[in-house]
Length: 167
Length: 201
Image (cartoon, rainbow over all chains, first blue to last red; front, side, top):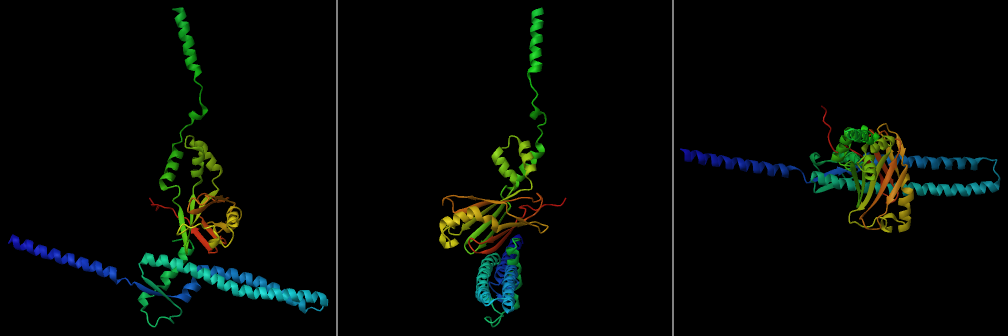
C-alpha cells in the first residue's frame, strides 16, 4: 500500500514538473521576437522632431520676414537706381541663403532625429528582448502584420521618455 | 604645615585657572549634521546619475551634492564649518558631465568633432558653458555659470567637465539640457532621480 502511494506521488510530481517546464517554455516563447512600427508616426510624434521643427520654423520665418522687407524696399520708388542695384544683390543673396537653409536644415535635422531614434530603439529592443523591429512607412513595406505585433505606441512612449531624460 | 597649605593653595589655583575654556568645544554637538552627511554618503555621493547614449557616444551627467566637495576640501573634523559653508552656497549646483566613446577612442579627435584637436580642447575649456542650461520644476531656465574642463591628456578614456549653476532652490528637481554642437548630436536632456524610493509613513 505504502509502496503504491509513493509511486503515485512520484508520478504526480513528475507530471507537475513537466507542466511547469512546459508553462515556462511557452511563456518565454510566446513573446514575439519580430515586431513592427510605423516610421512616419514615430518620426512625427517624437518630441525631438517637434522641438526641432518649431525652432526651424522660427528661424525660417525670421529669414523670410527680412527677405519680404527687402522686397518691399525694392518695390518702392524712392530708392535710387544705384541703391536698387545694391538692394537687389542683397535680395538675391538672402533668397539663395533661405533656399539653402530650407534644404540643409531639413536633411541635417532628419539625420540627427533618425540617429537618435535608432539609438533609443536599440535600447528598447534590448529591454523587450526583440530580435527584429521592422520600420515601415504607412505599411508599404509590410504586406500583412498582426496588430498584436505593432509596437508603435510603446516605442513612441519609450523614445519620448528617453529623450526627456525620464527613463 | 603652613608651607604645605600654601603650596596646595597655589597648586589648586593653577589647576583651576590654567584650563582655558575652548569656545569651539563648548558647543560641539554636531550629531545632526553628522547624521545628515552620513545619510548622503550612504545614498552615494554620485548616485544621481543619468546617461544618454547616441550612436557610439555616451553622455553621462552626475549631480553631486556640494557637501561632497566641501568635505573633500576641508575634511570632516569640523562639520560645523563645512555646514555653514554649505548654507552659504546651497543655491549652487555642481554637475559632473562625461563624454565617452564605446571603444574608448579619443573624442576630441577630428573624426568626432570635425575640428582640430587644439580647437576642440579650446571649445571644451571656454565655450561649452553656452551649450548647457537647466530647467527647474517651475519651468525656469537657468544658464550655466561656468565650466571646468578636467584635462587628462589621453590617460583616461573619457572627457570630463564640471558645470556650475547658481540660484537654484536646494530642494528643487532639475532637468539638465545640453545642446550638443561639439559632436553634433542635437539636444540631450537629463533628469536626475533619487536612487531610492521614499516610503510615505
